[in-house]
View 1 (cartoon, rainbow, N blue to C red):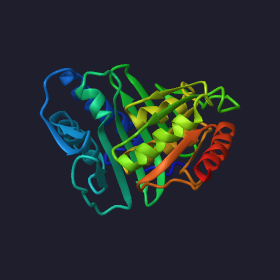
View 2: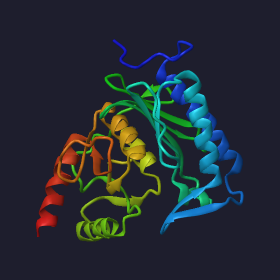
View 3: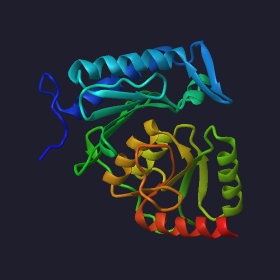
View 4: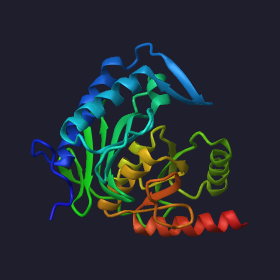
Length: 268
């Protein structure tokens, strides 16, 4: 039974999300490597005028089909609807990459009901790659099922990290990476948490770790990884919800070993 709501015109929620993400992605592409207006929310945490244009497009497309739903977005104030469903949006994840002309960024959408994440979409407009997952229906990349990697050890794993905007937590993660090295195959600083977790979901990287993520990254990344057969927890091993949290995503084997290593190093 499909637990996702049908839209006003009878469309599937995941299809509405995909269409909205593609339209927002087109806006990002239209202005990529153009000069944009930048406002600093905190050190290295910025919002551009393109973020806001893409945010408006996402809400316009989704609210036309689900006029009573609520919205939470990284860039604007929450909008409260009359429904129990909430859309969590990040029109541009990887804003620093985007503003510096680095071709690694995406649009992120998740549909939730309470703390339950029902569906998620990550769209990379540069590569025209759409990652989509529905709870209990698997994860797709451009309509083809994908799964997490089959690596069995952290030592053999390609790991993705991001330091985020909370300096103390980012410094803690950086110190942990230094202490762990060379305990994994290689590492990458991704610059987009949502794409980092999408890459875990499709097996391109084996592990992704972040010290503090926000709802617009957490909700979608979690459902993509879990529906691809992986595991997502915070640094204490607890399930992640839709609120600010640390995160570790991987397959079950690598996740378990990494958790043991993390706990050992943090208690040392």
